[in-house]
Figure 1 (cartoon, one colour):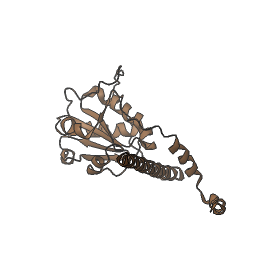
Figure 2 (tube, rainbow, N blue to C red; figure 1 turned 90 degrees about the horizontal axis):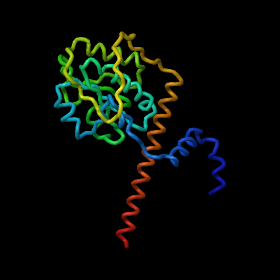
Figure 3 (tube, rainbow, N blue to C red; figure 1 turned 180 degrees about the vertical axis):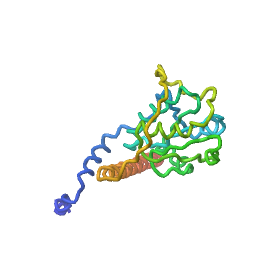
Figure 4 (cartoon, rainbow, N blue to C red; figure 1 turned 30 degrees about the vertical axis):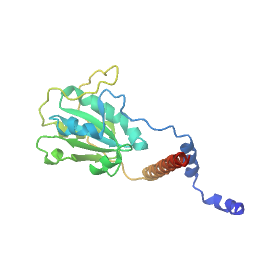
Length: 226
């Protein structure tokens, strides 16, 4: 059988080697907003009392902690939440779809990151359980601030939006300023490569999860035999 292996090597994609190395060194995952001062790291158990039963407007980022685009976008979401903290109109949250994939699917999330809004006066869809979808994919600071500023422009300020207290020191509030209109990134070979990498990361993660489950079942079966 070994004589057939050299003939297979030329067809192996170099990226597979990279992700195989990454798989062996995988240390686990950390939630992207666990220590955030301005973004609340949500779970399915607190979505209802914190978001749906709240009178406050909520912007929620549905992300997956393994996703490179989500990791790149996390600081943007953090800065955006900080930017709007001073006007008292909205709260910001995030839900890790890696841990709560069923919940994210029930909210109609089909890609990461996906931003949704809840409880906007005059926006009927935002009062549905799944909220109103704003955007899927990365955005620049200026683009997302401009988009959310338009959503909030006609809404009176509220008393006290929900603010996380996990971080030791809050940032100094900034005064909102006008931002240019959002600009969508045109499709290119670079964006296509990013999507390919995302798909391969997801595949490797799924394979790794399946391998871990199989090992656990084997251990349980061995224990039962004793």
